[in-house]
Structures are given as C-alpha cells and as structure tokens.
Amino acid sequence: MRAIQIKHPGGLENLVVNNIQESEPGPGQVCVRWHASSLNYHDYLVALGAIPVADGRVPMSDGAGEVIAVGESVTRWRIGDKVMSLFFPNWLEGDASLNKMSAVSGETVDGYAVESSCVSAEALTAMPDNYSYAQASTLPCAALTAWRGLMVEGRLKSGASVLIQGSGGMSLFALQLAKAAGASVFATSSSDEKLHRMQALGADHLINYKTDERWGKTIFKLSQGGVDHVLDVGGSSTMNQSIEAARIGGSIISIGILGGRKGEITFPKLFFKQLHIHGIAVGSRAMQEDMLDFINQHKLVPVMDRSFALEQLADAFRYQESGQHFGKIVVEY
Image 1 (cartoon, rainbow, N blue to C red):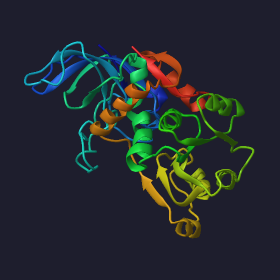
Image 2 (image 1 turned 90 degrees about the horizontal axis):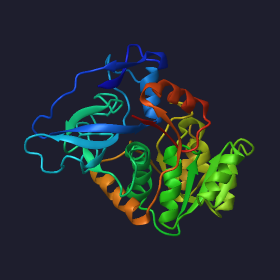
Image 3 (image 1 turned 90 degrees about the vertical axis):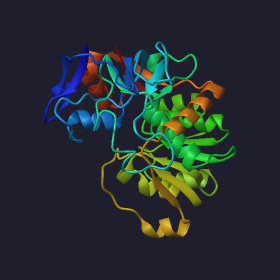
Image 4 (image 1 turned 60 degrees about the vertical axis):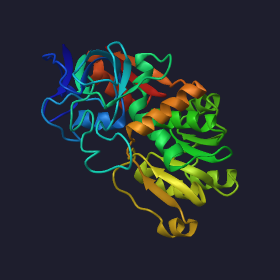
C-alpha cells in the first residue's frame, strides 16, 4: 500500500511516496482504510523539518476512513464503520497530561498519509452524519481546537462576542461554531475578498488588518468596550492587538504562532484589563465527541478550498504556503 514518508532532514522535497507492508490488527486495535486527510500548520512544520521527526515518519495529524478489520476484544467498532482520528491518540478524556499528550499523530507516532493502518480502537471517533471522508478529515485538529477554545475553555454563551483572526480552517470553524451558538463575530483578514466571504458565513464586523494597523483598538471601539473571547492565531504578530481588542475580564485563547515563536507583550494593559490568557493544543476524544454532537445538531458543514491526491502532498503544502486558500485544504486517496 502507498504511504508518504518523511526522509531526513525534512523539507517538501523529502516527502516520498513508498510502498509499505500492510498490517493486521492486534488485540484492541482496528485497521482503517484512510480516504482523506487535511493540512494543518502543525503538519506543515513537520513536513519542513521545523518539528524534527523520526526518519520514515508518516505525516498528517488528521484522518478519515472506514474500518476494514477488527482485532480481538474490540466492541466499539464494526467493519464498515466510518471513523476519524484523534490528534492525541492517548488523550481520551479529562485534563491534559504529559502522558496523554506524548503520542502526537504525524509527529511522535505515524499519521494518516497512508492508505491503511492499524490503530487503537479507542483512538477514533465516529464521523458526523452525512459527511464525506474529505469533510470529516478537516475536523480532528482545526475544528476541535476551535471547539475547545470557545465551548470548553470559553464556555461561550448566546449574545457573547468573539474575535477570529484570518481565514484558515480553525478560524472559519470558530466563526461557524460561534454563530450557531448565538454569538456575534468580529473577523480580521488582510484580504477584502476573504472578509466578504466571511461575512457571507455570518461574520458581523469586518476589519482589514493590513489597512488598519491598530485593529485591536478599532475592535475595542466597535464592540463598545472590547470582545468577550479572542482566538489568537498569530502569537508574536497579533497578541498585543488581541489584548487591545479584549474587554476587561475577557478571555484570550492562544492557539497559533503564525507570526513567529517569540514576541513582546504590553504587560500593563494585560494587568489592567485583568485578562485570562489560556494556551491550548487541540483536545481530547471526549471533547471531539461533544463537538460531533453539536455539528450534527446544527448541521454545520466545513469550508473547504482545494483537494489534492496523496502523491501531491508536497504541492498541497506549497499551496498552503501561498496563503491563497480560504478554509481547509484536503488530500484524498
């Protein structure tokens, strides 16, 4: 069967297509015929070699497919069930811990850029009702991060205000989740065209951060005292503006480092506003199952941009690099 493997030292030119041996499920395992994966910034860093992995590692933290074999003592799944992966295969429920987060799909353990593999029966959830494999593959990292940031950590309520940044997969999921929950949404982008597309998805207030360098203050004024929840994806390039945009006692969920790993924070404003800043990394199986219930209830559909074949994974990452995409980029096989 075909698999993408990363050849040391990484880099898009070192994503190679190999034929590898199929395996049989052991006790407590199922084998899944994977049909789709989706690209995340984490996967991009792994592919580049910025996050070092073992030579021959199979990348991609998202996967959706069909159960094709069931090991001894497995009662959770049957052959033919449609399933999707977990970003942290060992984090099933409860609070995060080093042990629960030690296995990272596509990084410390093999991911889902492979036609089939055997995994723990516990490291899967069902797919949403009536979803394609491609649609389901967009959920385990980006959508779950948005869900946890807003619903688990933020305890989002109807009438609250949310700031999303950019038009990547996580931000667009957050937009859809927030609107379904009855919140108002402030959206930023450097592209007026993308802002208009976010408006069509329900965004209430649009801010072009390229033409408004002090967009945090602008949002503070537009929201008449700051927003309740900020999902910060830029890190060093956005955190100070996120602090400006938040209300006194507001919540900032730090999710990404698109602007770089290191930066400076204006501490007096952080203190004065008495902000809650919480860093998160995806979530547990229990959170993913709660998210699926919400998706089914509200009939949410992910925003997808383009699809690539498995052997075009490097091209898919180059497209991601370009920043042209709106929503999720998927790989189907």
